[in-house]
Length: 405
Ligand code: CTP
Image 1: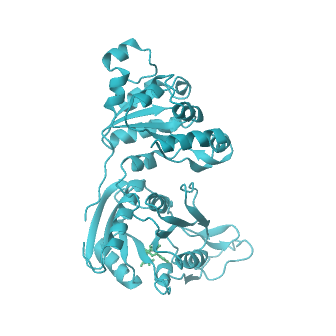
Image 2: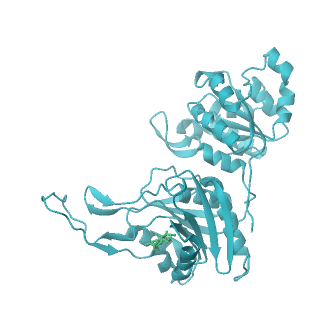
Image 3: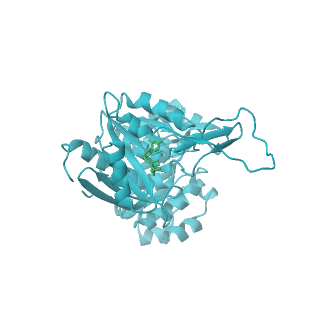
């Protein structure tokens, strides 16, 4: 089984005047790393946030800021530039840019390019949450969507203005994933997916806990990819500081026991469970009610084993399709296959920890094993890999049981 994706090769990146313009710098670099040729167009006010020189250095191409640049027009006219692009991406797309695009304005270079292009742009909105929620913005968004324009985000979370809500620009890695999307449309339509993510914290006393280094990024990316594939997604998150993917229902938990309770309740109604969380194998036998004081002597902690959440889900009366993760340092295939069998699950996604890959990194690589079959998902940013995993899971669900590949 092969599941792969790549970004369009010629990308015109439009940058609007929002503080998130700084993230467009990283996006430019990442698009180039992904093999794209990138030409950047800044609105006049975007230059107040980030200079054209920055984008010129990052893209390796001249940057356009005005329709009235005779030399640039002589090199590649604006109509030619609009036709050149395989995809126009606008990040950040401000409320004003969205309004101008909705009304078909061509009052600067970027809006003119969008009007001259036959392909609908990808808009990545970023603005204060009240501006996003305003009926005027929502009406403009609805108009654009009806015309086939795709909007990515906004993400929910803390905003540069100090407030919180939907309005944050989606992260560059997630924009790359959206651009390199493998066709997932409807692959999980009508399915209910439960995904766990992040670490668990096992409290020792009111100020200390045993935790681990899981960032939650892989699980959050998988929840987002499942949602994009049409599923109704519940994300059960350990303690992480990540924005909730749009359209996903999130339940925050702290300990392995709390995660077991939340997972068991949610999984009872689910079609697919993807356990990505790095669940603590042990917890303190008893959490101290008061702060543990130092005594001058060695301290011995007694730990007891936590329940195996995934294994517990195999006993559900309406057993969902169960996917586990295995982070291993050696004997990847043997250990992953042993876990697949021991837990009685349907598919295991194994990754080698080390070699610059693993739980705290932005990239990952996965080996998928199921009874009688195997697939490799080579190194890629986690959001991209998440889409490939969802495509693979959708493929396994469609395949009759026992089909090798
Ligand atoms: N898992 C779980 N409940 C636990 C421990 C792990 O549901 N108490 C799930 C994880 O979410 C993951 C899979 O089991 O999907 C494998 O986790 P891992 O820690 O690699 O495996 P363990 O079962 O803990 O085995 P070992 O410690 O021997 O590696």
